[in-house]
View 1 (spheres, rainbow, N blue to C red):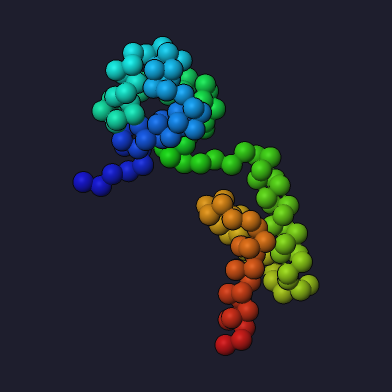
View 2 (view 1 turned 120 degrees about the vertical axis):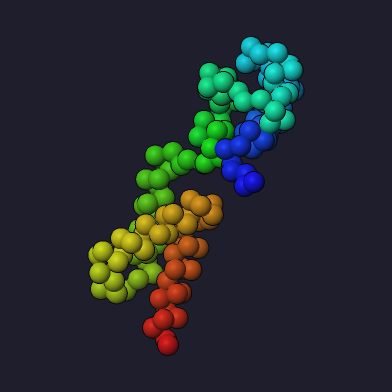
Length: 141
């Protein structure tokens, strides 16, 4: 049986990770969420699914993203996306000679770099260099 990141054991593992990062004990988290210690422990062990209200309370009180808690997906705040887009455009502009790509291809490359930067957590400069090295290799062949 294939386990997805939304399985109870994964939600429980993320709850544990967030709790430990905050420095809270299981007892403290149970109190914050107004659930019994036994219930809270069973969430972390993946034996019981927290209610939606409990998950929302958990994400608010421990300041973690609800999508991450439930689905394991990290989201990037809008401000960060705008900053990343600006950095990517600047990095591409610095590295690419005028007219090297059509506007559409330039846009696709920028989109790919943004996706990779978010997925890998790398900086845009590194991703731009990697992508452009592929085009250089193709041109040399």
